[in-house]
Length: 238
Image (tube, rainbow, N blue to C red):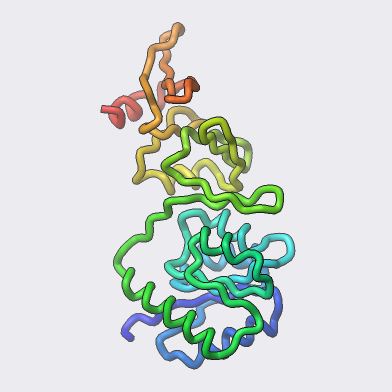
C-alpha cells in the first residue's frame, strides 16, 4: 500500500494498549502514529496527528471516550473502533458513528475482522471528506446525538455553546469559533458575536425600531443581527 493507514490507540490500561499495538504491528499496511493513555491526551494527538483509524476505550478517568468524541466534533477519524470491557455502551457507540465495538477480552480473529472493516472503509473513502451529520453531547450520564439539520440556532456560553433545538437546549463543550468553522459549508450563518442561526429555520428578516435588524425563526424566537454581520446574512438569504 502506497500510503499506510495511520492508527492511534487510546486506552488508560497499558496492557490493553500493548495488546492492540502488537496486533496492529502484524499488518504492514498500518502505521501506529499515536499511543494515548488518557482522553485529554487523545484529543491533543488526534488533532495533531489526524489518524485515519482510532481504537478508543470508553471508560477513562477525567475524559472518557464519549467526551473525546464530543470535543472532536467534525474532526473524527475516518474509522473509529471502540475497545472496552463494558457491553452497555455498544448502542451509543454505533449511534456515535463507531465502525466496530470490540469487547474485552477479544481474540486475534475478532480483532482482524475489525481491522479489515476499518481498512475497507478508509480505502473506500480516501479523497472524500467525511460529513458529520450529528453532534454527540454528553449530559447527566448519557450521550445524546443531535442532528445538525434540526438545530435552530446556537448561542455562545463562555467556553461552551448552547444548541437550541425546538423547545430543548443542549450544552456542548466546544467553542463558538470551532463550531462556526465546522458549519461553514452548511446553511448556518453568524448573526451576532454570540449567535449563529440555521438559515433554513429563518422565517424573515425584519428591521428593528432602533434601525437595526432581527431574524425571526420558525419557532418565534427573534435574534439581533449586528451591523457587522447583516450584509452576510442578507446575501446568504438571497
